[in-house]
Image (cartoon, rainbow, N blue to C red):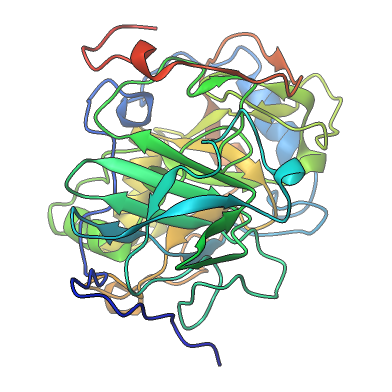
Length: 353
């Protein structure tokens, strides 16, 4: 059993329950209501094609139902939380540059926390083949820090293949942090703001409402359009391989059909809150993998998933053909030639990109 790494500091910054990170501008793409947005002309054909891969319609080379993964931790920092440098791992040549922040950039690290997939939460990457993401949001500055392939985090630094930050107060351009630039996610997206946790689902259920933001989902590389992505993604991968004209490109936004009967599907208000969110804000194709949906672990939230009646199978039975595909413009061709968006070009005044 792994133990969480505890730093001996005069001012501890232990993780406590806090609201999930969210972009604060209502016109940030993640917060936009798409319940009645224009659809791609071949939306129905795209979803029929995706459903044809397997009997359940989701996954990679494996056949998955609409399952939820709870392996991600979202940690919270403040002005007193110590920062440590990003350290390129395993070597400088393996680090994603210029896509990510330069090695040496500061990254906050609470005393107690965890890297994706570790149980109990620990600051050492698990050995089960996960991508080892690390997420920390500074609740005071509204800056989110995310790292990918994080081998470890300790007093010597955040040892990762990519470490970067997102300003949650800003509206990023349609190509995010830069055209053809990756992030801690394959599409170049932020990750933590697209997750959902037990606290926000519970709160939405009490009001019979929704989460107020889009959700992250993933598909296998074999089920995504070959070498293409659409905005607001800024990146795709050359591992994608579906050459069908109705294939789904990286970055696509799917929304649950308005005709989908939320109340008939489940009597659990927590489940209904997630479904209403998928109808109003949809979900973004963010990375390659097997389990479709990703949520936050309940290790650091006030409520647990079991206490609100949610488990990994709560959305089983939902198929690709229950979704529409939102119009996103012509697909871009993947090049890996990252051109970063200067930080001073990112506006907070609602400029429409």
